[in-house]
Length: 174
Image 1 (tube, rainbow, N blue to C red):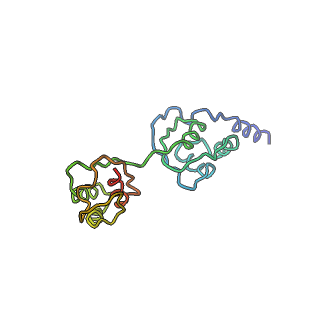
Image 2 (cartoon, rainbow, N blue to C red; image 1 turned 120 degrees about the horizontal axis):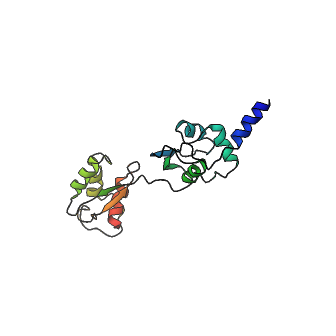
Image 3 (cartoon, helix red, strand yellow; image 1 turned 120 degrees about the vertical axis):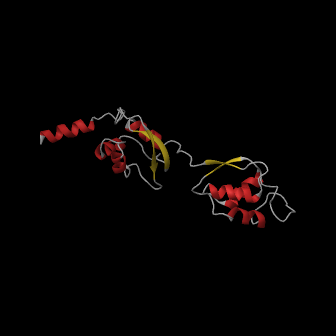
């Protein structure tokens, strides 16, 4: 029995500010799924080398407030301490947005083609909405299509949630 107490005491005294793997400074993206709890992340954090053990992670969580945990993607390193890791996972997640540029002089079909080539839409989806004016417009448009009203600009778009209608409305707002 005394050996068990020594082991538990040793584990309890682990420094949460000590790097988990000081030599591995490679940055990578770690994703916290929506609805996750800090306690529930333990097995995955251990598997990815971000926490030394589930027991130590749970013990660490007993000593700190982890209700600030956010869902999203985060840049992390295995050289982070558990304290740094939790601070990162409670910080602002990385944006999923990517730039998409509409060049001056592009017509509806050009924008549609570029969106399709980026994999944001299926070909014709954007053109159908823009030519039928099936969107909310912030001002009256007397022409039959939105040709000439779609603002050329570099827009940040989320490839996972791209919506042609919303994108056209953003262009009209610009």
